[in-house]
Image (cartoon, rainbow, N blue to C red; front, side, top):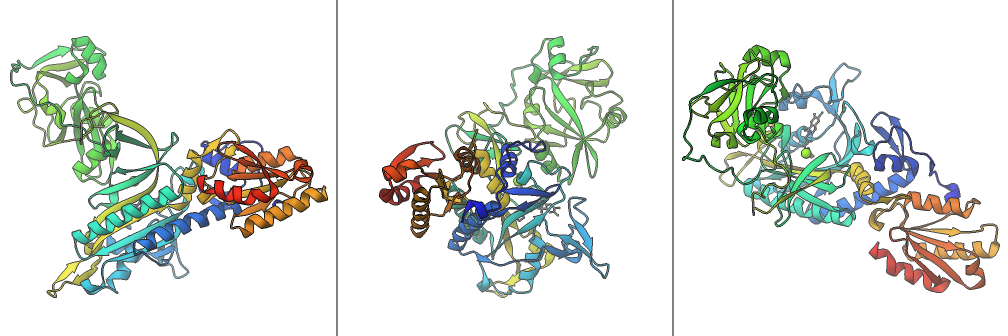
Length: 569
Ligand SMILES: O=C(C[C@@H]1CCCCN1)Cn1cnc2cc(Cl)c(F)cc2c1=O
Ligand SMILES: [Mg+2]
């Protein structure tokens, strides 16, 4: 390909709406253009990167026995009514009607479609295991699409579904996908980590997210400095709290005046105790009830853990009027003592406190010498707190460190949640009907392209890992008008492509500086400059985009030299 014929509309200035680097660079380097909010057109260079990502994914998934199919984007509402999810999802689910006024949705995921397909096709244990996948557009009507391809309303996903006869089979499928994902992201040239994660509304048991480490990542990760423990902060745990100190005498409950002291820190300071001795009472509204969540004053509530402990669908902080109504006092003076018909969920650490402080459910007043069990009885005692960096690793006790990550993949053990709901069963060797055991495994393909940029850029633009670069090399003649230079450039361009190096030729009659800037902005791994020296001394300049290293090489040695460098990029 010749640059003069390509559609690569590079921009000089940074588009205002782009907040993260990958969004800015995908626009400026002419990879994408916005068609609507959260909806993009992938221009030719982006399509080439996506094609390489799809190829890497296909190779690694097929190696594990995956079979590619292609499911429809448009899905009949009946399937979602049968699974019970049609009314679970709100405006995020793109819904539409056909000409006969029948309801459909644009697929945000395909558990219903694939499970109903398998229900009709698999009858015997002999037909499993099955690993079926597709690479298809997905639709989720995000309230605030942002960060370009990192959170769009239409995006490309590889979604695989595994079908096994039992949990043992599922464990094998899950392990195979864990391996495939490790190979895929390694081959894509990104630094990533699988982390323990929360399975969210999809349900099922264990799940791992594959995170590309990047400061702009929306996910917070805690990982161990010593062992392989790593978890999304939504899920992270630490060593269990120290137990109750039996030596301490439980004192008499007492009300004290704490005018204007609301936060755990203020109250602790005012009463001369440590913040951890003040119990924080947070009221939440779920789709079913109002609950009180208790954590120590030096901790925060982990709302994902709380949601899971309650088995609720939605969880939101109760507003001030609800708190007032439930406790008779404003936030800041509320506590668990004397609460009527409100479920109390206490973090395990709270139960180890003696003579603690809580709000008195009265303006400007707190209670001291509060002892769990004696003065209030939580209905649920679980781990519902956020873990922080610096706390001990739950596996080995070493210090937990924090990082930000972009979730590019997630694998789930679904179990029989969908096969039971949709009646996908098989006959085992005793002819007994059993529900199929499923897993589901996603990779955000378009998101991975953006995540790769978030990890591979500098002040001049993108630095593509060679394995997913749109082209691997660009030949730039300094003076295209000079026939001798052009002749050498053309020959080199041809020889490189014949040697299997995906190479383009910048034949534009632009100033060299403009061509160099574009090549750096777009991020081709290698740049070969054919200038006067090529004509007078037979040497060309090979420059590596990442390191900036430049080698002067004779024209005849340039192809072997490039073949030698390329695998290291
Ligand atoms: O998609 C998954 C789980 C896995 C991820 C990997 C590939 C297979 N599915 C979870 N999820 C996320 N957002 C959704 C948004 C909408 Cl609007 C919806 F209706 C359903 C879902 C939904 O189910
Ligand atoms: Mg997730």
